[in-house]
Length: 460
Image (cartoon, one colour):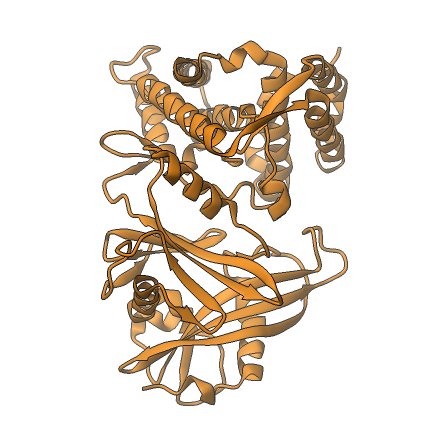
């Protein structure tokens, strides 16, 4: 057994201060870390040759950070071994203890298995509670492996049957991913992978949710990848109406999104809100974005006109929605489409992500994703022909229409019937994309700017 207590908390803090900024899930890249404090150090258990601890840290950030707060909390499961296998070398922390290796525990199948066994037992480990939806939701003894590339979270697979996702950044309150999956489970929704268990804890009298386990859908394909394949085939064929197209899938995807919206509305309710309150927030974001993307300034008059038309709608129905819907948040299984990752936009606060909104925001997010799928492939091509650009535009129009048709077939209401409000939500998303691309991928900026030119044409 490796005695993790031999590694002092000060040593762990020093190592994490250097290590965390290099991780993809760290949300404050480019910010100055002025402090790091371990606030919880929970021994998780041990196996022959390895022990594990669940670490929570508070990171203090510099005064000029635009991140919604000066302190961010993260969870960092750690593994401890006397010697580490070669595959763990890349995940090692710079800890000075000579004969103990400290590393990211979610890269070690043995550490992942400890979390799986804790979920199976539905036990409490210190302040951490492992909770199961039902008594037999999680089997013990399952081996684990990390899944794919990390984003804002880290996902691992248990026994090839469960997907266990750890929310790297921790915020007090109810996590919408767990909350909405529980609500959808109560409706019998078939367009999400069933929730089986979750992890939460009480700290300083506040509830925080750390992770969730749901069915692992092994035989699925990501919506983004599937759509890109369709676009690539279209451009290769040069046919405006190819033999195989994504439109049928877009229709079925529209149905799936509509079913999820209907189930959430039935379970969690709806209310009416003045359209003005929604569109005023959009206009504020558009005007603020013009400072970061100077090219937006010419579109502000038309944007204000679009917002005024949307405001004239009077009131709009709001409910709990996905909040960050795009083709990367859906999976195609052999039988249906599934929606995943109900956390909402990572840049928003937990309170904002749990706030009811119009279902049109999700629809607009998917329409923008179709646009990205069609046009990002053209960026890699030199000398793009007018014919190729036209084919990409037609693909967007065809699949956007099919998606809305599928959505309307379930709800009885076509999203396009609220054209101004839908356009306002599309503009909101496109402006968000423009700011991101201007800061991170300037060569991609024309994709959202093309949409902005369509939605809010610059005045002559």
